[in-house]
Image (cartoon, rainbow, N blue to C red; front, side):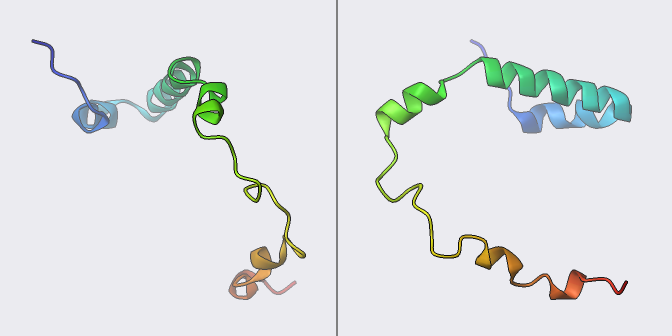
Length: 75
């Protein structure tokens, strides 16, 4: 009987890797995840976007301006 591994199971091993090997592993994992699994086409066929999912607002960037005042550094 095969036990499915989880990311939590592998995490202690990943932490033992040097930083450059952690980055290399992350890139390999992302590449493998992008190439396998369900495609976006299948997902959109199963649950197509609604009419207002990609609708535009009157001022679509207005929400991005709120809350950034504290990060504005003096020049």
